[in-house]
Amino acid sequence: MIVHIPNVFGAEQLRAVRGTLESAAGAWIDGRVTAGYQGAPVKRNQQIDERSGVARELGDLVLGALERNAVFISAALPKRVYPPMFNRYEGGMHFGEHVDNAVRLLPGGAKLRTDLSATLFLAAPDEYDGGELLIEDTYGAHSVKLPAGDMVVYPGTSLHQVSPVTRGARLASFFWIESMVRDDAQRTLLFDLDNAIQRLHAEGADAAARTRLVACYHNLLRMWAEC
Image 1: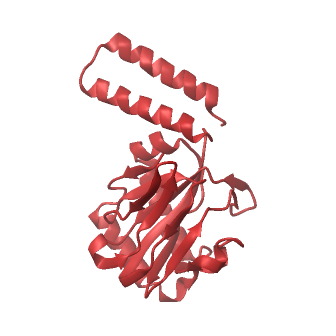
Image 2: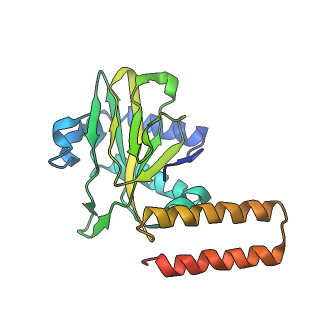
């Protein structure tokens, strides 16, 4: 399941994040430092050193926005989120086809299973050429280039790549989520059911029927969740 989540950041938050990134010249490093053996040969970008104060400050802003985002909570059913990182592509930089590492080490040594990958776009599409996120699933390749402040969440099992940026700079935050429900098909069913319940509630549909559907949702979540 590939989910587009609009307006994770509003205009004011975007200005603040962009200003901090643009003033953090000394914190940018070669993006290959966090790539595995598969990704390093095809990764050409820059990222903010995840040990820096800038990364922690901006990562906390992202996490705070996600905690308040109902679509993200419904789609991801997050158990743990890897501290958000920040990258930049410019001057032909790209990231060739790869799949993300199945397990990441969290600060402190705990392990996180990467059920979901996420990209939060921080530059508007007209600021750069290229830079599409290409995600493969059973229906083919999907090209994603979203407005600044919007985010895409997709299965960590997906082959994906970032096409070369030939003009301007592509700025984004990226991170991984371990879901309470590791199976993508089960998460999709729960997400669709939750959306249907919310729509029925907004339309004032039969209250007793909605109560039954809510019970079905929570009983499925109870059956599948790993808390």
